[in-house]
Image (cartoon, rainbow, N blue to C red; front, side, top):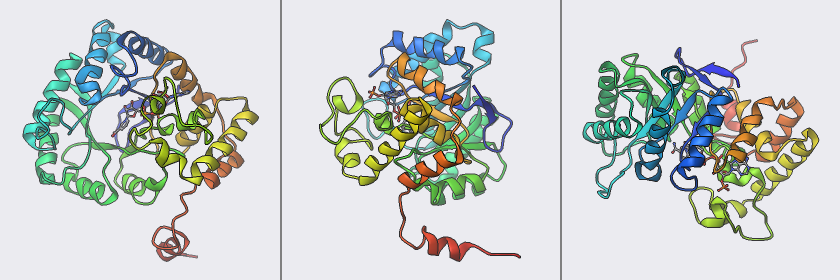
Length: 339
Ligand SMILES: NC(=O)c1ccc[n+]([C@@H]2O[C@H](COP(=O)([O-])OP(=O)(O)OC[C@H]3O[C@@H](n4cnc5c(N)ncnc54)[C@H](OP(=O)(O)O)[C@@H]3O)[C@@H](O)[C@H]2O)c1
């Protein structure tokens, strides 16, 4: 395992984080606990969860495991949570108001059985709540010791810039979670530069595109069986028809397969190694249904991609923006030679 500091802060984290979104849904408690044992035995230190995962059950599963750990083992962990979306039946109990976030954070602490979180992240922008109200809540949560650091998730570039400039050092805002993987690189246009300019470490979610980059889906047949899209082909941003209709998907998978064969490694490991090599990325949030998948993914730290491998993957996955504002003409307009 490798380690880094998160954003412009002194918080040390492993460069692979364990995500818990599958816990209590695709992954039963016993298998989830085995994943937690396996991850920490491999030197992993950062657990990432959210109150909405399996309606709070994912946090309960993590809490149950934490209670079985020694104080020393618990102390080694950085625990991150997220709040913003409704957990109960009332869909209006949502957003980033002081009221909602206070209750969301208390709920998370209770289910995890801890008295504070190392990192608490706003799960997504809320167009209704004034930003100052949200930042005021995070500030008071830091001052009261309920959280040590705050972070963002799914914010756009201008939202990141607005949040960071309003914080102005009042409390440590240190991270941001976007979807980022070889099939979703549009975040490189505005979101990652905004994170870098404002000292936020990037924690990419869905690093394997929900399983696509493991090479399990094909053009010839629709998914079936015990896989995310086998169980629900319409699921989320990884939906089969969305991704299979994009020629880029198949270009990326072909490039990944070639490099995986040359290295004698799985496609998942190559995709994760590419992501870890991106300069803005602090720690990649792994997702797994089984301990077998997690073992595969943890092995990505051993993979050393050459400059040529990285360039091949960059080319195959290029989202090819039009010339302006994100393509060559826009980049040229923003450049300035000093020599
Ligand atoms: N901030 C946010 O809004 C947000 C959103 C989504 C996720 N997240 C976080 O990011 C974490 C990771 O996201 P994700 O679960 O979507 O990640 P992912 O790595 O893109 O997808 C994980 C899924 O891919 C399949 N898989 C993983 N490793 C594999 C391997 N080695 N071989 C074959 N199949 C493999 C498994 O699904 P099957 O076996 O079912 O095919 C697994 O559940 C989550 O746990 C959560 O903590 C955050």
